[in-house]
Image 1 (cartoon, helix red, strand yellow):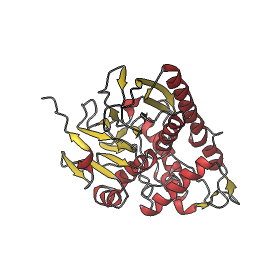
Image 2 (spheres, rainbow, N blue to C red):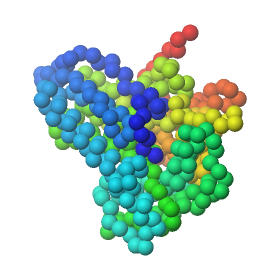
Image 3 (cartoon, rainbow, N blue to C red):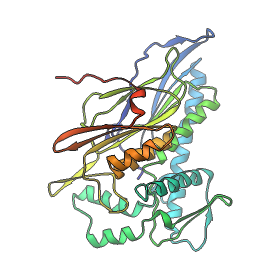
Image 4 (cartoon, one colour):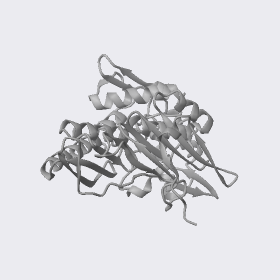
Length: 351
């Protein structure tokens, strides 16, 4: 789901550590680049862009264009706006015939369908009917009624999403289907924002959509952006420090978004196959080739669990992950083979 009016702290963050504080930095050819940072609301959350540009006018022009692209994509993927493209598609289900969709919609649906097949439904953008029930459950602190949960599950299933690449069409075949892009759309949006910045000639940039981050060329004089990985517990300093460039990185977990009902903790992340919020406390950080892949894989691994999730990441090209989960009241840390190559330090914890 694309969440409404959330602060950046309401999602486990991969906080960009702003360790390069100089206003201007020399690059190899003698050009002076200045650092610019701007934060604006977008897609029901908060987006941050950090970039290096030769002057303020160039930076502002690129920033305005990038944020405009993010706002445009909200009109495509928001499931809170009945007039968005996602809203219109959902309200038309079941569709008697396939309908044309935008390039952006098809790209995200196509990627999501492929990941759904690879995870056997562990990741599924048709989970919208269940997401709606759990929004209400979190507000009222009551579990969804069993009958309503079964009715919602009957409307969920990626196999009922029919796509045609040649015609760029989509069809929601089951009654009551609802699209939910909460595990993929922000990742796609940060990718698109970075592309806009690149078209303006600004390649040294970072775009952060409330914890879904994509990174371009590193800051001047650096070999990568320094990214802090938020720990499982809220209000704690970053637990790991990464150095990254030309990739996406994302964290999914329940440090901030959960509900306790009858003494049991339920995450905001729901399992599309059971219809229930996850009950194992965990935090999953994923590095991937781009923001969309990192966003979606982090959600998928959260649902699949450590063993199946690690297998998924290991067979995904250029992906790495860190899984932290609570077992018997103790944290258990699981890393993929490629994770350590990106890590430069472990941030010390305060006593």
